[in-house]
Image 1: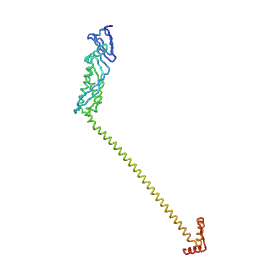
Image 2: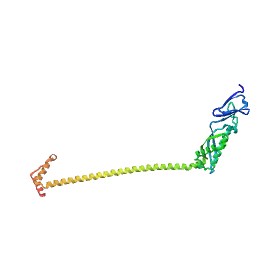
Image 3: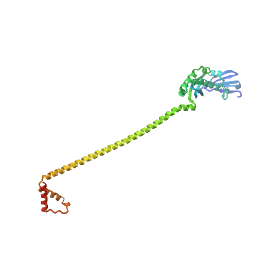
Length: 293
């Protein structure tokens, strides 16, 4: 029907419906049939948590440019206070905002965070700033929660977070230079240690090989000495045996020696071609034996 529409807010929205400037109904998640839309105004404030990113560029205490990026999460805890300060009027059919005030609210919250962040940055040296992301986020959160500015407009900041704190690229290179140098030194030291270890292992291997050769050579020397001793002992045994044989023969009568000689010849008869033994030969041998004895 012409001139009649229906409006319903979500459970996470606070709505205030006014007709001819007078509030007819307000609250969280309310709904209402609107009879004369052109005479009715609807204001709609979101109650869910809203995230607002931010990015700041500032100078540190030692006049070094740096950038800080992060964000904050806030909620509206008193929609009536918000509506006293800002115009959150929406189109009844599309819920599209009719003013820029819904954007001005988070911008105002962000400016407060920026003000505190600037104060911290300008009183801190860059080197320390680069290591205090969490500490800065904690400090900003405490400041935003305790400040009366946000309480006056019905807003509560749940948390502030810092994504990164960065110096300019030139300053970053200058800061990173000693670190890179230390890494290169560590890498060089590791290479040197590996090479030194390899040399030491090679030296140990060669020393083991040399010790092995010395040990083998000593064993060969010991074997030669032992062999030499054995040869000498054997020669001594043979000499003693010959001497004993000679002593035995020297005590024997000539006739027996001649007979023994002939016996030995007989034992080798198969190796002798022709041999003639005459009485004269035997006599000559006997005479020679007698003369020597």
